[in-house]
Length: 317
Image (cartoon, rainbow, N blue to C red; front, side, top):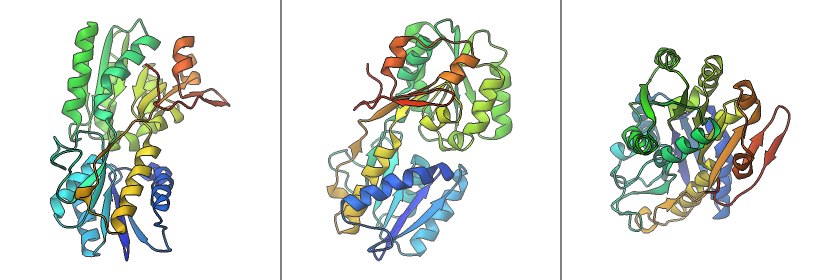
């Protein structure tokens, strides 16, 4: 996203689902007195999971002389960083912004970038534990990753470490296209008693209905990083509360529009997580959800009802 006159811009690697988070971004802007179409104009750009489109999208925003760019995914933030060292950039990233080279430190970002780290790539061990708790008979775990996503290696290391501790066989499946997703599920179908972790990635989010349908077709218990998978019929999800991350990004974007510098705004880290269970999917898989797991869920989805248990830090430990 970008803003001008003040003019802000948002650039996202995802698809239309990002529209659901724009409300939270606008709320953050509003909290610091920046209101779209009143004292700021916002330009929206979506890559729809196609990372190779991002450089052109960012170049167009720079050409339009925007005041600030809100790059609401790691690939979008990388593209923005490569394109400008002067226009302020507010990022949301699933990875460590220091390791990515976005900032010098969390407290003193320096340069033209700051934003929110939502820690998604470090949640694999937690997801693995939840998956084993719901499906204790699981003999093998597969993890579906996009090798083009910047945080993939860190996600894999986290899951591999947890699998080693639990003595669970781990199979890594890689996909960057729909046919490769098909091939990954076909490969997994050959494993006995296997379950699946779908790693955080904008491309997978854009194909959530497709992935959820394949998991159901092959009767594979799966956990996802974004609640929209569970909303689409997936078994369960555990990850960052994206609305909160987008709201924080909106606050920083608004503060920069008003004249503050990114270098003076410490990187924020997500403290809100959400754990969602889909009972209809569990029943279809022949799984009984333990009461202890239900009690820790922020949201339980049944056939016609949704039960929300609002917890300050998502799934309780």
